[in-house]
Amino acid sequence: MSEPTHETHNQHISQQFNQNLSELRNHFLAMGGLVQRQITDSVDALLNSDTSLAESVAATEKSVDEMERMIDEECTQIIARRQPAASDLRLVISTVKMISDLERIGDEAAKIAKMAIKLSDEGKAPRGYIEVRHISQRVTQMVSGSLDAFARLDANMALEIIREDSSVDAEYGSAIRSLMTFMMEDPRSISQVHNVLWVLRALERIGDHAANVAEYVIFMVKGEDVRHMKIAEAEQLISE
Image 1: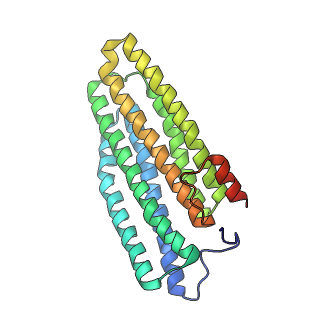
Image 2 (image 1 turned 135 degrees about the horizontal axis):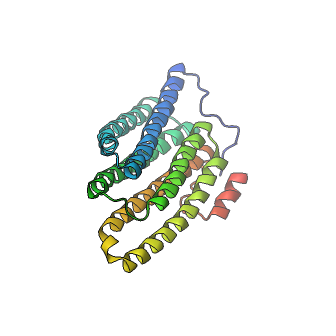
């Protein structure tokens, strides 16, 4: 059963509890901003053959891992000391889940950065960079949108991210088919284009993780688990 939509996540008798929750939200958004920059930098490094930028993305991975550990510890302390209930408990539980997805987004960005270095060393830019640019823009917007939905406690915005994931998956499938055909027509391109396929796969996974974050935002706001629901079912729950 859904709880009233007017329920807030920031009204407590304990000012310290308010501060704990506010810091948790801010730290989560900071981690999200960091992985979003990783995506942008890794793709820029690939498209511009910028090995220095690619190396900086790989170095940032340690910072992302540390932020995940810090936020996880914050959540543990809040549960142990404050024993949150209702919407506050959902916020903490959702955050634990979402930082795992953010960390994995960082991992995928690091994979792209490593591939950027490899492709730069090989020289000539291979086929597929147009697809990389377009899909990377879409998944970066998905990550940004999921973070905005979290910050605004906006279930409808989160639902839009889930819808977008299906569209990105379709575009990814189309790009894969196109590049596979190209490799069959030009066997000399197989090695390089194969590397681009791995980049596209990483981008598609980033979109999946952004959609996961959006699903947890809906749970946080509405108290409904939409992870295995069809879009139409989720829409109905959110509108109730």
